Amino acid sequence: MPVSPLSADLLPYGLGSPDLVAVGEYNVHRDILPSLEKLSSLAAVRGFKLRIESAYRSFERQLSIWNRKASGELPLLSADGVPMPVPSDEEELMYAILTWSALPGASRHHLGSDLDVVDANACPENYEVQLTPAECDGMFAPFHSFLDEVFGSGEKSSFGFNRVFVPGRGKIRPERWHIAHLPTSRRLLESFSLDTLRHIYETTDIACKKVILARLDTLAEEYIYPYFI
Image 1 (cartoon, helix red, strand yellow):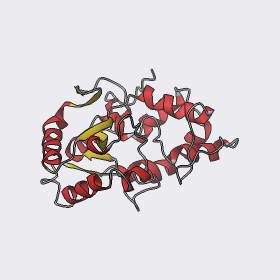
Image 2: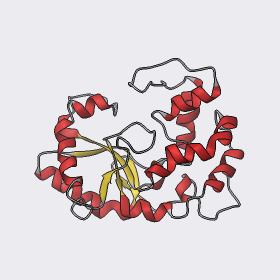
Image 3: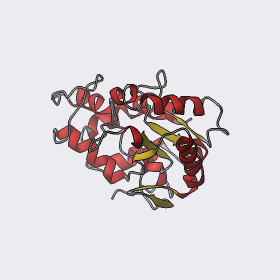
Image 4: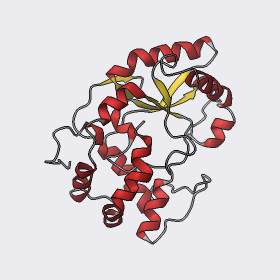
């Protein structure tokens, strides 16, 4: 595990020991639990069953996803969500992975405040959720219309939750399924340092390492900082 001497607080990077609690098979930051219960209860009143599909991820977990996509072990998807060949050019490969996957150490899932959610009541029996725009526009469309209504009513009425990956904000593709408890994530991101992230990469076996380090300032402006809201 890489450890940076530049910062004693490695929690924003998916390192260290965040204060997590289990919700089903996933872990979330303890501080979001009361708000999550309120949002889930409101969803239930409206006929939806909020189910978590992904929550906290460690640095090692995000690094594994990144490296397996780079090697072709996991599918690499185009901006349209269609499987694509693994590019031989390292920079092209890096940007292809970034279409749908965050940089390890810069994923909001490291915080434990962010969740990928669906409506379990809308899932057909034995259906394997993919977390795609097509699902959001199809079987989960009523659920996302409900979330649109809740998030549009203001942060207090939404119990602190909102979407982060929306059109026009940075270069990450919109993800309607991804919601964040903003009061918690803002607090956790206060200690984030690009210098610390750079040092972590320097001591980590990450695919596309050379181009990531060379382009890190630009990557931060396009793929990291726009989502610190």
